[in-house]
Length: 274
Ligand SMILES: [Zn+2]
Ligand SMILES: [Zn+2]
Image (cartoon, rainbow, N blue to C red):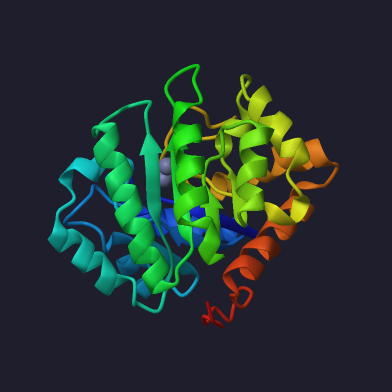
């Protein structure tokens, strides 16, 4: 009844027990997982696809994360264009802007973001957005939302704002551009008030849940390695906020996921169209 819309399943943190971790997710009711294929950057961009080929209930993305934007070369964009044609690839990402870590210069991040938006549009794939501002600022939100407004919104393909940490005003701008808002385990943290305030107002049929495994484990697993089985903690927290049970919130967000990506529900798992 749960869909984990964002997990880094190929992470080396799972090398010792990847199969068991995926089995635990299934036992916990996670019927579908999206394996995010940004890996460690160029050279590993097919990592999500490899897992999706192995497991029928795993879908994949691929793209260059803003952290690795400075490593992106022409050949990597050509590779992504080819990978985008793989049948289990449902979105391009994660892409966007990260002004918190600034692992790549901001102008390079913007350029690599723009290039990938063009390629995703040509491939007719929605995009998965990573957006993190500097501490106490909304600088990355302003840049990201205005780039999306100019360069992405008109094509109607939409996408997902992953691990949403912004305000309701940010969420509203993205919703108006056809984006889904995905919430992660940090909604369970004590300092999550701004996220919860936004989550109160996001329409129920536009919400998704994710783990961002192996990062950002929810309470009561905080500080440990995260894994897809823990996505139910995010459903529990959002359910409490919206007056739904954990299971109801799981089913609601799972249905939203299948609708947005026009995928058959669990068990069938063929791509019904994009
Ligand atoms: Zn991210
Ligand atoms: Zn991620």
